[in-house]
Amino acid sequence: YMLASRKGGTIYTGMTGNIAHRIFEHRQSRGSNFTSKHSIKRLVWYEQHETALDAIQREKNIKRYYRKWKIDLIETINPEWNDLYKTLNS
Image (tube, rainbow, N blue to C red):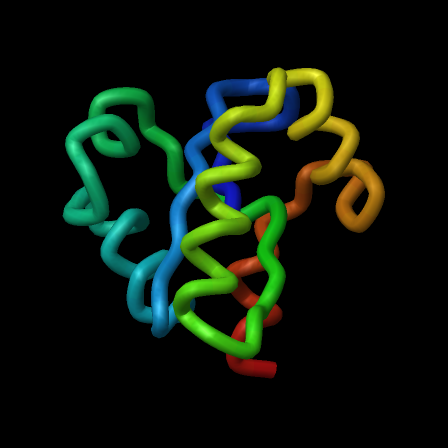
């Protein structure tokens, strides 16, 4: 998953086995020091994987990519950088 502070703002990349709970933690400023410090709470992109190993590898790959590539990835599914958190339990 990727979180952002706002459209075009600071981006955080993570992985979890329970995305709804993890994003809730970020929104409560309990997710990580980095997201708390930079007010990063907006879920702007996520994808699911068959195994935890696949998800870990994908996270590592995304973290290596340049910012422009991450922005392009976000905007392929979410051009307005809307908060996707509310769609998780729908």
